[in-house]
Every structure is written in structure tokens, then in C-alpha cells.
Length: 81
Picture 1 (cartoon, rainbow, N blue to C red):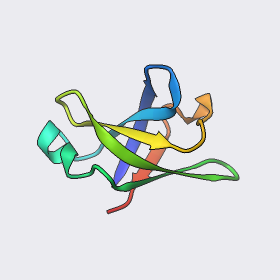
Picture 2: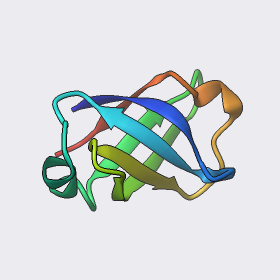
Picture 3: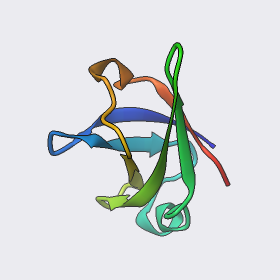
């Protein structure tokens, strides 16, 4: 599944908010909790996991081990099934 990083979650640069295509409500988003998320930088592949749903519109919280750079905002991310 493809998504877009829309913002950092409360200024924690290790956790970002992601809007995933096709996920429109909280129930559909809850099925993705625990799935692997991959954001590819020019040289490095950052791997994180979906940790929860943010709000009722299906926005996902994705947590990474290392902080992401600010250039990740509005960039595509892939959620593995």
C-alpha cells in the first residue's frame, strides 16, 4: 500500500503521521497496526512500524527507530502487508 507522510506526531521526529490510499476510517486503519512501513531516502531505507490510528479519518501513526529528516514530509511511504 502506498501512503504519504503528512506530518510529525507532536514534534517527535521518530513518529510520523501517514495518510494511506484507500483507508478512509478508523476501522480500516486498525487492520494495518503492526505492519512494516518503509520510507526510502536517496541512500538509506528507513524501516518503521504502524503503531496506531490517529483520529477518525484513518490517518496512521508510524514509528521509526531513528528520527527522520524534515525532507520526508509530503513524500511517499510504502506499507507492507
